[in-house]
Image (cartoon, rainbow, N blue to C red; front, side):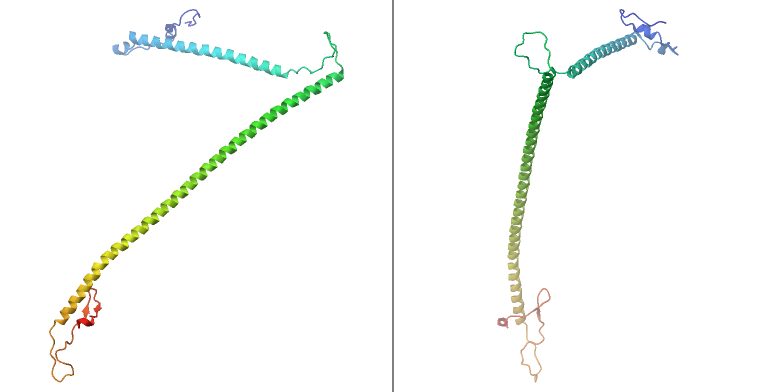
Length: 246
């Protein structure tokens, strides 16, 4: 079947669908799968696809025309640049129109003037480029210097904060040490007082003990305390009582 259609007729998706064979259905439910609504959806999708193809084709044609025009403009610009500039010849003082024949010396002088003009223009362009480069370098140097100053300020600020923190920590440590020493001193005084009280009580208890009698004839006087156990502290250390308690 011929599927080619004239360009002046609308797109007919039925012609394309006729190229695909229709499979035989195995049941009534499968034969009724493509209902009227499914056919309308399929036709609508085919219409959208055809429209998309048309838009892409149109854009492609426009881009080709644009590229061709740009290519021709580039060729013309290159051709124009290749053309030589007119010589800067000086017209004679008494010129009344018409053709003028220039001598080789005049032509050579005109070419020299033209070459000198080209060199001057190139020198001006180079000078402008050098000025722009120096200006850019100065701007970059200024930015680097500014960044270095910022980093120096940040480093100095960090050092100051560190020194401040160290001083605060040292001050807090000294204050804690003073508080600890004060607490230890306050705790030590009651302990010493209790220790002295304990020693006094022990000495008084020793004096109140009854004397042990000795047999007569011994060199020791009667009524003396013999064999009294030594006084010991809580840590089992010997205690020497003061003479005023004896």
